[in-house]
Image 1 (cartoon, each protein chain N blue to C red):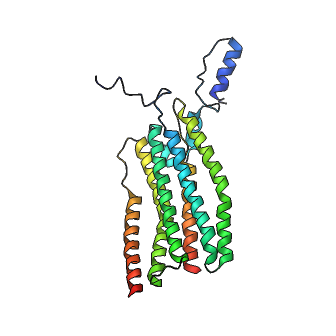
Image 2: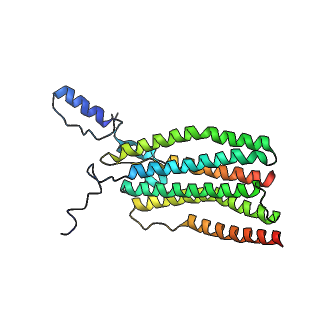
Length: 157
Length: 118
């Protein structure tokens, strides 16, 4: 059956004594072109389009990491609201905590979907998708801001 | 001057890589530092809340997970740096990104359970 390309080249060198200049910057593994579609995840992102400039892929990766840090902040805030027993109206404080924690769980999912859609758009040279994660964050912060304000005011009164 | 001659090529080993690999590695470190910090704060504050045994155990498990995560980030940075040197780099980061997203979502869900039921 078919053998890896690198092995074929090696046998040619041995049999015919012909000098072949192998590119030194390629990886030692078998040719990535053959295996790449099976190894890369998720396949629906990588199965179409051409390879984008890796600098843009890395920028996309840094964006999702920033979203992960934001999610960690939301989780820490939601946990701290309940754990530190702050002087606020208990029902609204619990509601704020729940909204923050739900957002903390949802933001990574939304960011992952956005990362995949952006990566695919870059591969197909299409327009970049809109900011779904940003919308989730805007709604969350606005709602929590109002809830915390009410919780503080009601506790004072 | 048209600008074309001075613009570095986008493909090929002579492409200007800049500090992309380093910037991405630092972003991973910042993210894991946040994770470790959240675990540390949880370790300090959660035992003062009711149900200390379960909560302290959860924080301890999260703290134990941090060294393997840092090792994972180091390997990831090495992978990025190595692939950027290739003629046609093919980054395979989807699985790692999915993993860290799933982990953060689980952390949020765990926090939700603690806030509602404890």
